[in-house]
Image (tube, rainbow, N blue to C red):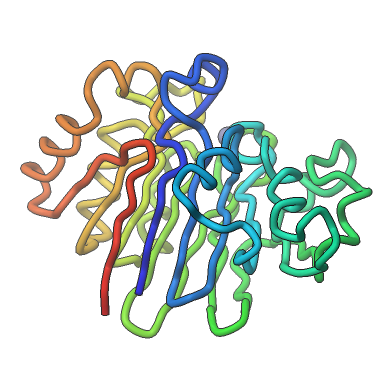
Length: 252
Ligand SMILES: [Zn+2]
């Protein structure tokens, strides 16, 4: 069974500061492998509200080191390991999230079984789950990767922050495609996906279901569910807008 829970459908600074939308990122249960993915501020609180149990996590995964993707990584490490009493789990993060100005605190690192540095275009195994990192995204100076999670019956793709570039659609193969859509209109000065670019990616990848999330203020004001309905009409592909706390389930 696949269960994707959105512990927040908001992204970037305005949403983070205002909490108009929650910013807790994602919680994936992929055939029994549980991952806290991009635990932004509020991830732990919203997970507990959804009665998700952090001690059941197998991994905590960061696509990149921006605060709206990692604000709760340390709280989630403590929760996964019961304050370090039960060492477990793997933390995956890019190099710049672990070095120089690290977002994963050094004193918590012995609490987990392993910390693995993500690199571009690599394949990783987490228990029964195989996943692959994308090419490096175009997201300013910050090292950023997305993921294809390969399950027996499905591929789930997660496209985190990036400026649009055409090769994105070559890597992401998911029949379930989660896309971070921060902007209404593309802006060369802001390295994030906009609605027209999401439409292009959805049309090229042709998933069974596309789920939009990580909304900035203007996307939120334009009503994400109406944007999703328009994209569905344009592409002929099922498009859903995430809501705070929404769980998307695919039963086998
Ligand atoms: Zn970012």
